[in-house]
Image 1: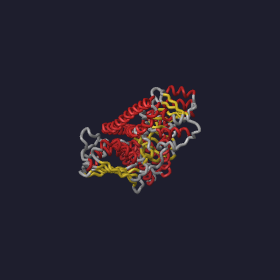
Image 2 (image 1 turned 45 degrees about the vertical axis):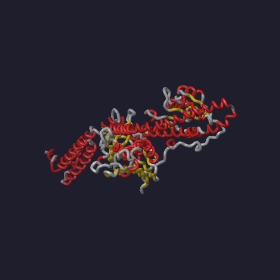
Image 3 (image 1 turned 180 degrees about the vertical axis):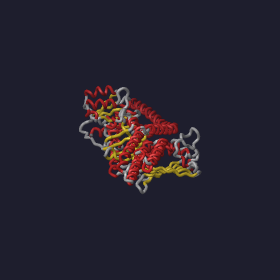
Image 4 (image 1 turned 135 degrees about the horizontal axis):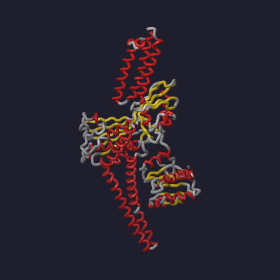
Length: 589
């Protein structure tokens, strides 16, 4: 009879009603995916319902009896809902006093652990990748001080097996075992991020494929006149040498004008080599990702010029390029990602204009700064335009208006993702028959480039007393390259050259007297990385004197290595001024 009184629907009906609503929310969450949020909501609502039922019981003078019964009912409901969170398909973590105090099964699996104890015995920030730690610490401090939840954010976690997992985290503040805590409701987006990376790479490769013939044309032209000029100079030197040999010293004065005439073809050869160098640099920056996903202040006008050089052959038969560069701030971005954005937009603009009517068509590029101090880039073409019914879909993945085989449908979707990830904005206006205007707005950079990311020094920026000639060791597996470098710098310093990493290591084990070691990064068998790592262990002072040079850090190990070591590096091809400045800088430091 007592039990029947306790279960009187007059008091407990709110529990059943709200419990039913909570169950519906949970089921809805299961269908939609974020079951965890539903479980937390159910816990909160059930607690409110229990309090409401208790107050109603108290109003009827039966609070003492119902308190015990309701506590048991609530405890059992809590256990069930905790069990629900435990089996939820998405990770849930609870952080209190800087430590993980609870992790459900999905969190254990996402972070590649065997049990929850592997997580709850560590500091929370030990699980966060270094670049995110400071930001997440500040975010948690703000939450705990303000009492307000923080918006969701993607966070890179360090798994126990050394791998990385990316979780989309939503934060809530709660009480856990008597102290204030933060609940992390997570969604594992590691595979999605990897897929996005693959799609971005596919888009870059598709763009490179589109430009391949044009880039080959842009390289072949300067290579041809470099080769022709060098052949001409070689033949002239041989002819003049023969005249000197046969004519004696009195012929020398007559041959001076002929020697002076060789300056022009040599100058043209240098110009051609510089053009090839610029194209190679642009391709490397665009295709390799130049520093992974690192973000630092970049000059958007310089990157636009790089993209224009790559797209030159695609544009020059369709339209004139009009530049209107105004003053713009540096923006925080990854150079290769912004290059990908500009190149995609330039190719789209070019392909919207039919070939053969260049004087009457243009692609106008303008840059300026808006009233909020943001950089604004506008690319306007006089092409066919985009129909109004299509315009809302241009950023959808795999949507394209181009003919089959002409487009992947990824270009503008990836452009939109890159720009928004950098906290920028992108807008497109278009009218059929009048062309299209794309406007990018990017926030100004918050900091300055690191020393190793700054532009190369000129030879006069850094001074080394010439009281003694520096000893410089050159290490490169390309014998012709090493020989030419030694020939050039031997005018200033005592230079030695070794074309094998193993021989270089043997030499350095017995001779620590080199002021600077200019070492190629990628070599067969023993690489520049291997040389550095051995010197760090055996001769740490000597390891600081290494200046790396690289034709492209095309392996994951090489990219990670350059990001992690403090040593400077030069990207091939470089000029003599850059090499001299870098050698002097290493020697003084």
